[in-house]
Image (tube, rainbow, N blue to C red; front, side, top):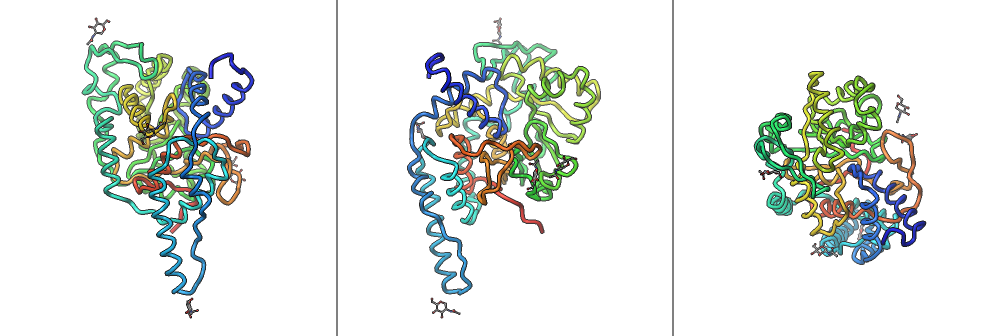
Amino acid sequence: MRPGGAPLALLASLLLLLLLRLLWCPADAPDSSRLLMEESREATHGTFAALRTLSNRAIPVPSTTNSTDLKEESLQLSEKCTKLHYGFKALPNQTKGYSEDDYLRIITNIQSCPWKRQAEEYENFRAKLASCCDAIQNFVVSQNNTPVGTNMTYEVESKKEIPIRQNIFHMFPESQPFVEYPYNQCAVVGNGGILNRSHCGAEIDKSDFVFRCNLPPTTGNVSKDVGSKTNLVTVNPSIITLKYGNLKEKKAVFLEDISTYGDAFLLLPAFSFRANTGTSFKVYFTLKESKARQKVLFFHPKYLKHLALFWRTKGVTAYRLSTGLMITSVAVELCENVKLYGFWPFSRTVEDTPVSHHYYDNKLPKRGFHQMPKEYSQILQLHVKGILKLQFSKCEVA
Ligand SMILES: *[C@@H]1O[C@H](CO)[C@@H](O)[C@H](O)[C@H]1NC(C)=O
Ligand SMILES: *[C@@H]1O[C@H](CO)[C@@H](O)[C@H](O)[C@H]1NC(C)=O
Ligand SMILES: *[C@@H]1O[C@H](CO)[C@@H](O)[C@H](O)[C@H]1NC(C)=O
Ligand SMILES: *[C@@H]1O[C@H](CO)[C@@H](O)[C@H](O)[C@H]1NC(C)=O
Ligand SMILES: *[C@@H]1O[C@H](CO)[C@@H](O)[C@H](O)[C@H]1NC(C)=O
């Protein structure tokens, strides 16, 4: 699609795509009009034939009490779950032509199949991530991977550089700060409304490392659903500008809000767009001056570039990855077991209950659904392959 081609249709699809991105732990992208055009171009072709076949083949859940029947049914179930597994492996990358109903049917099927960690798949996938991206050494900027005198190239504005002089260099940790790596159990907590009344808080808090996106609330009545533990939380520079007035008069509010994250790392995309750099440094200095317990980290732009290329080979061709997929990828490298909560880009549950945008606001997305984020289909595939586990609904409370 070219600018000026069909302005109204373009505007409508841009608005829709913007809505979808907001649902999905979005990354900041000042240059969003280009981004959205890229995405809408992506969305205009292709099919998702294997998924369609799967979605028409609902898997019955065993319901009888006769043990012979039960055995037969579960045999049938495991055969179908195996097919689901292989069907997913053969999935094409395109997602067009799928309604929300189609996806909810597929997810109903996936949910009815038992989930089991597949160590071999996990190691395979982790090895691929390690060879492309190596999160352990590269995902944050450190003095180790970025010596003084480096000309740091921006992730997105890749023709722009920033020279790393002493003053900037001193903001970086000496080396990668994840001293307890590898972590056993990690939770990646998205902000989806699906977490509302999920009772997942206790389970999340039991994890060894908890990742969160964009300074979400974790105290008060939400903590029973989302937990209160945070080890790393991402910060979109736009929230600093919009919610915290660039840390001028609202600096105290900011410091109070982040105090709820204990000694977590605050992770900022300082070197993705030039417009992010000043704001990110401001967060660093604000924390330093007030002797806050939290530490600031910066995403390494080269890591993010390599990661985007990795996902591109899997068909995720969007202009920029969402923060959710970035930290999910990091978690797979840093942790032995990864569980995702609050990742739900749909307007309702499989039981047809409306789901709000975020667990902390009541805004309902419009009913109806036009484009499945490709990223979500990738994450579903990781779940089906036993590489990570997606929590689709309420948590079991012991
Ligand atoms: C269970 O089902 C099998 C085969 O359908 C039947 O032979 C058996 O009598 C049933 N048993 C009970 C306890 O209903
Ligand atoms: C960085 O860029 C400057 C100016 O373009 C150049 O003089 C310098 O040699 C470069 N440094 C490195 C390490 O490439
Ligand atoms: C949580 O508390 C806030 C006010 O403290 C209230 O507005 C909100 O509705 C409550 N949410 C739930 C799920 O109880
Ligand atoms: C789809 O993904 C495969 C790898 O899984 C890749 O080789 C292929 O180029 C992708 N196709 C498109 C159209 O992106
Ligand atoms: C959470 O769910 C309850 C009932 O299901 C609803 O009343 C409330 O508004 C929801 N809260 C948010 C933040 O969506």
